Length: 454
Picture 1 (spheres, rainbow, N blue to C red):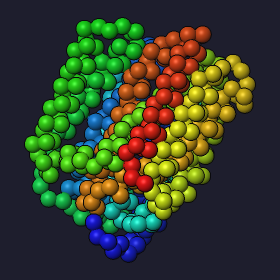
Picture 2 (tube, one colour; picture 1 turned 45 degrees about the vertical axis):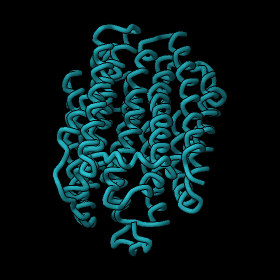
Picture 3 (spheres, helix red, strand yellow; picture 1 turned 90 degrees about the vertical axis):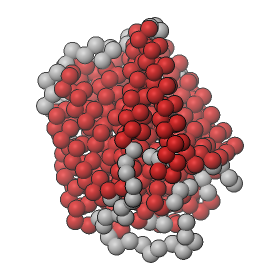
């Protein structure tokens, strides 16, 4: 990397705006769909085994193809791939809104995941390659804030739309946001430098098949509460396919979609483990808490959405400051303290009672969890992008996002064991899940403390 930072880009504000609009699609869709899940299940007569797949049909291609999506931006140009990803996402959102059964809905959700896998790493990659130094920290902090704000607006807005208009409106909501992202990127965002060499189609196929096999097996196991021959075969096959992916990347060397040389750095390994643990815990909570409140507490979807509002507001307000702080003092302490505080918030939620007052049973844990995550979100992204050469910012951001989504993917697959319960069993299952999430978050903080440089 050069010691002299290039000047700030022209239209820097428009670049941030385009990236924020694009990535907000993925953040917004995730939050509103979780709130609408019980209503969608009732409308389309989806059973307990199908409900996790309404989430996982989106998360699976998203997590499996993020690496490939980042690599396509490095090769074809990040602006071009950003626009393509947003267009695919918009088309898929229309398909979700028009679905008359679970088959079309699941297929459209999968197409949404493909679009998100292209737009997410390229929105972040554009910021990483366009800004440098403290300006990069501020830009990424702003980007993270926009994602958090989209997540904040999503649950209450989505809940209100479900109550007042119907669940299909949450997917129509994506269309104007997508149009704005495409228009801004087309008019104001310059194209990034295109790379050389070919794309790793075999690597993408192995990663996708491996994650798909693992997720299918975990979902089958958690929803049926039993280890069966199909789930065992799926687990073994998934591990074997991902092992083949690693061997294939090793053979490709520097031409790999995910160059394994990056793992020679202890901080990079630590950031990877931290991301998997922390976002796995967070993904489980964001899915299960609205479901607990709606099914176990009788909350209307709009009120269940509002229950998540403090979490996203705190992150949205704090992420820009946290990104600037990490750019000045480094990421070790924010990434050590933040997840441990997050774990404390999960521990408080392990006693949540959906029938009790929200203000005493849910809000305290949400606030503590929010403060912890606020200290980790932007510093984590900044630390990852700072660890690689500018040529590979798309690949690095794609990998980190893939790890985050993989954590959420596994958590959603395992959450089927809780989603299939009712009454006291549902509440008890949520309490156990919250304690597991607390342990994962604390482990993430300890990982940062032991692996990141002072």
